[in-house]
Image (cartoon, rainbow, N blue to C red; front, top):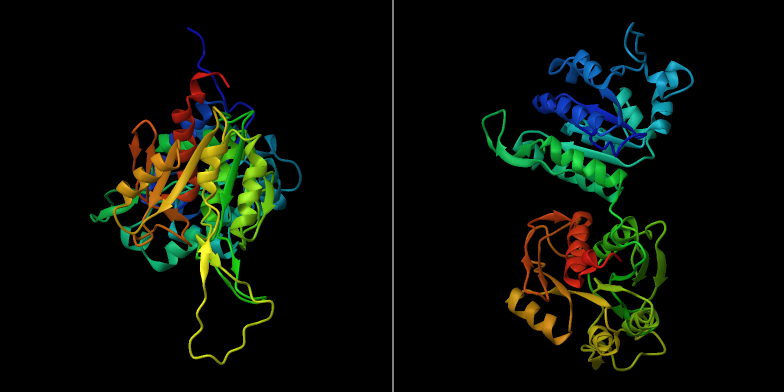
Length: 422
């Protein structure tokens, strides 16, 4: 019988284990990673050792387990010097340099708070602060802690920094309470790790153009009309498209976000400028994802000087801005894919299906900003995705990064790219 493939051969993964009853699942993560060829270095907090012994992880990983800043040498156990170099007191730095990925599972509210606020008071928190590789955390705690303002705020901060959060699962917890707080299944955590280290390249050779953010329509030299779009959804789509092998282009209105490294960034201000940038790219793109929220109207006249306060009522006339999707559907060539977004506050599905047909889209993503966790200024979204084929998916509340992968995968399916070898 041939040996099972080991796709993670040559990869060094640091597993941080913290003081949660869910620590009993962490050995399964070690076994799964080692069986895939990875070298696993386990770092435990002192509290974690009350739930699982370091000896368990040393046996499964074949490597020394680090519990404190000055670990003792143990006979018969491979030391971390196999992957590190330098003095023991700098192990946290050397380990950070050697790691291809770090995962903290289970991640308690304590370690999440330390990570979010830059606290480094033990080996694990110090090592995490020095990390430049991808970082994954899998929270596990009581549902009340999980829903507390502090934990929610800290998780949001980590997501914004690019930390991948494997969401806790709902179910009966150790306290007897029922709710979201159980550590994700080890298989799920391993799948996320493999996906980050060996990302799918199903968009290799494709050019994906994403629009993001609001547009601003000037009223006078100092005022404009706009909307509350932050651009987060579009930025996540561009980053994930790049990760999946695409030549990614991001056309974006005014936003405070930094462009994802490696993505070609095209800044615009008005809807007309966004329209022009999209049409400039149309001849070469394979997939256009219109995640932006361009203004539908602009002032009919733009004052050349600041409008002075004085009138009791100021009346402005407005005219329509370009309908970018309409122009794209009329000008696109055979085989080009187009994904649209729709923000609706009533009859979401019916209105989205009408837009799908009217604009000749391959896929449409619809959400209602009045739903908790959806819409502008959130790191999560709650959407329904509808394909030209009639396929409909509602993944529930999901991070915008994870939603981006769902949208891109569905677009690939609708376009049949997974079957043409391209």
